[in-house]
Image 1: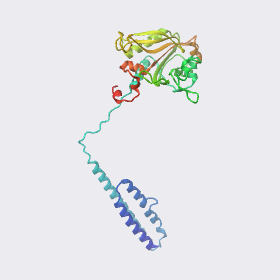
Image 2: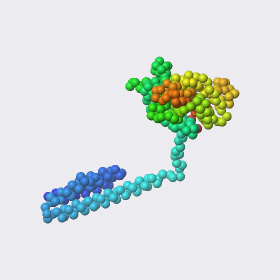
Image 3: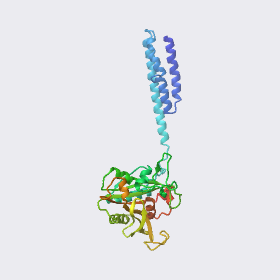
Length: 340
């Protein structure tokens, strides 16, 4: 039994030392350490078998096995130090006089910049920024907003419908309904976010774009409150000299309704190609909240009044920065984006 033990110790020593000399990286070193000195390692198992050696040979067997254990530990540490020094030497071969690789800093996307600027203007006027789901129901996207059955906006060529009967919201107006269902008036909110419409992509249209819609509800609100609020927004966004005008229009969820134009920021209203030589640019739609919308959220339309407005963020950004093609916002061309 003792002779067999000695042969095993000599064999492990011989094989281990040869393998340690061949180690070239840290992973191999750790694997070899586990092979011989780990909990289930060859030398560990040998040490556990010493109690089976006859009593008179047991001290010498234990001594030989422990000496080998310390020797292997020392050899592994020496190999580890050698590998570390070799790695450090290779690292120092790098020419530190060469210029480094410049990491360019990114910037906030122009659409995000514009959306934040618009939101901040209305926040300064006491509005709260709110959000809502991009996947909506027919009720919130149409019915609660007083959009009747058969309205063109409900058709599949104007709205993305999903297999489960829901749809991708075509406006952020549903957020207004959701807020009014949860909160009692008075309230003032703006709802920025992505919207989706199956439009053919061209210089002025995209199947996905961003909107900001606003709502104010209080007692005795009039069209003058809407005009005053939007006047502040226009001058803060486009400059104090910018003029604004209202044109009668129709929206199912507001009555009366209007489209709002601003004097062309390129030609200052004198007429140019950007404004089709009209001197005016359309920027948003607005109006007083239709009583039917208040009925849907159980607001007393005899007590409460409100105004609402909505605008396309990309359109505002295009006007503000003189951008002529909406596709530039989504192509991720660094040459374009790094200008902002």
